[in-house]
Length: 213
Picture 1 (spheres, one colour):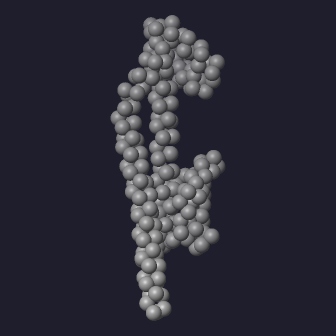
Picture 2 (tube, helix red, strand yellow):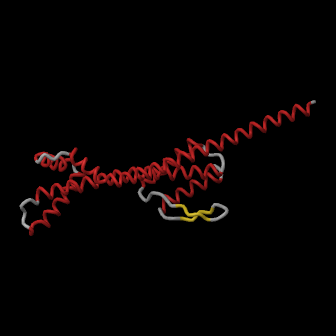
């Protein structure tokens, strides 16, 4: 592994361990790099898996290509994080919707003095709906008796979160566009280098034929 490869591995591991902003020396000066994941072991393994896939597929050959691969890893991890955040927001919004429905059903006709305890109980029930299949089935059956199904709940959730989802989609598209640009740059540079090598070989052959005369 050359110096650039070693630097990429060391820097990525450090970013994975510390999850904070560092200053990395790029020769002409020092530039900040935002550290990615990864205090959780599973996420760190995901990050390292993405990094290794990029290295295996692209097989960087120069220091500049290693830097580009480093950026590609960051962009790929960024896209994955956005997707995970969308899922978390969707889950949280569903829990909130379930809680609101349960409070509406349980709070009907309830005296003011009992509302606080009712809200606490519906919060627990909504959390159980997400985590415990048995509780989820019981709550869904109860909602269905009031002609409320999961399709209607999901539709309401998507309407509520569409602005946030649009933001994440925009961020993902931006990251994907930058990733495509980097891949094209690598291919273009390699094609340019190959063309120069080919031209040099042609010139050397011409020179060799000339000297042979």
